[in-house]
Image 1: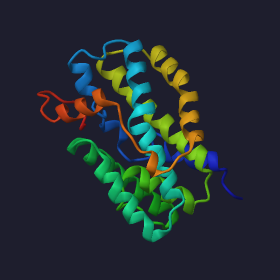
Image 2: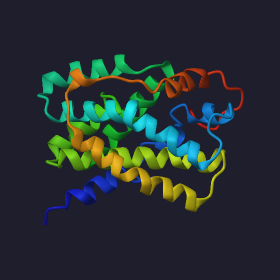
Image 3: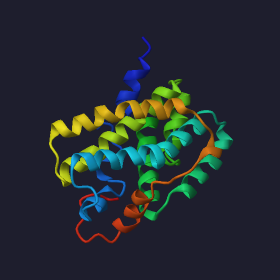
Image 4: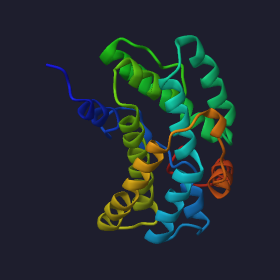
Amino acid sequence: MPIDPVLTLAQWFSPAFPVGAFAYSHGLEQAIAEGDVSDPAALQAWIEDVLQFGAGRSDALFIAASFDATEPELEGIDARARAFTSSKERLMETDLLGAAFGRIAASLSGDDVSKYTYPVAVGAAARRANLPLDLTISMYLHAFTSSLVSVGQRLIPIGQTDGQQIIQTLAPLCQAIAAQGGTLDDLSSTAFASDIAAMRHETLNSRVFRT
């Protein structure tokens, strides 16, 4: 009996899928340490900006490009994804997440995509598994949102209710970005505060997260 694509994607982006996403704050730890994000409203605004204008939107474009790519084209898409990262820490994050995702996905399906960055690995794996592209992107962004909310819950801290309200509020944005479409020609990033925080995080004296 074929597995429902929703269940496959729920497994891929579940906290139980051992990619180690819980270890990365995407620069948010630095922003919290500097007082730029200190309450639920600020956390929601920060994540919303990253989704719309930063890695959320760009990762969606890389997933879509990888989904539509031939095997030879994936190398070039991945090189572009690496070049597009804004800092050493962001490159480490997407590289190690991609490697972990690819290894586990290979153990389940036999298709090894572990040499690619995270969004490229996800796009390539989704195509090979015949999963819906929009749903793949939506659930990828939803998992990204949930991961950043968990950072806020640990460090600000905020309560479980506030965290779940943020995730629910931003869920339609995840769907909207997935439905927006676009190509790599549409790549841009204007989430400057997030990028600078990721750069500064490398020198943060006391760190809980890797990025």
